Length: 284
Image (tube, rainbow, N blue to C red; front, side, top):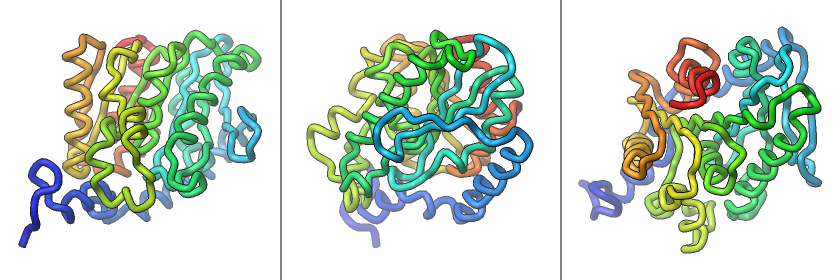
């Protein structure tokens, strides 16, 4: 029997499930294992990345896979992992989509919320500082600092969206399967490991700061994702459109949360095509 409603038409168990990807993606572990194995294969083909530090702590680093052309645009990838995990090295498999298209690919590492004792603010701040570092240094490796684009998924899409409200350097962003208002997340089981406060909820809810988003945005989700991740994407895209911001909503039929990320490795896949279209055209 369903319990009392906690958020919209969801009781507590349904809301917890809606922010727990494994409840809707039973093949999660297999797909994540593919991320790692395909990244190793990619490194064999492209060679290892150049590693740079953008801050003083050990985790504040990024992997660069360079395109061959000069003054190339830069795709900065912000990984997900429920704010608790993820590493740049396991997203190398996405690099070829961009490098083959003449785009530098940068994958960020940053602290996770367990290491920050439940505080999301250091994660958001490190992502912002990494972007600023790329802007300052891109020209040294033939990147065009005036053509920086964010590509992101899951909790990384949340962090990327947070960066948009404080960054004027970004020319466009692909946000896949993210969270853009933290109120329902705060009510879910994620509250057990994230120290939500009113200040954190307000500051890190990009949907509440639309006036500060100044670049084209592509918002994406898969039809096999949780109902809340689908709703968050639809509501954010609708809010951007209502605010007269350039936005495109991509609905990927038949993909769950993890499978959708793999389509970034395919220039003809839902996310790969959307990312390249955005970077080449500058608008969604």
